[in-house]
Length: 167
Image (cartoon, rainbow, N blue to C red; front, side, top):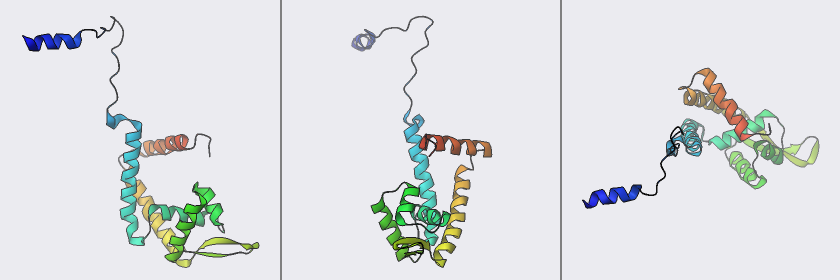
């Protein structure tokens, strides 16, 4: 029949694997590709974080800035940008947003009056503490399907992949 002829034609010219050699590995499915998995894990964490932080009126990125400022005060915008690996222009707009919300303030550096430092306001300190605790809970919930050991392994592996030079 015609269908049989067509079937045989599609097989002609395809080399048979030699006896004893392993069959060729199938191409990974989309859901097994690292980029796909990392992207969708990150999107899920971002969605969970955004939902949890709405009560504070800040985004995950803004919380990161608040935490960077709280980590090592007093800091200039450039110091905070460098700590976070963010360009200066982006940092200026993030600080402007946080200042508009009353969470940070620019003040003269006591060591060098020509330079401004960014400081948390009392509302900023309170928000950073509360939002930081909520974020920690979101991370715990996100990692809950893993054992504590596996969660630590994931963090260590991602740190090595993100910062291969130990930065």
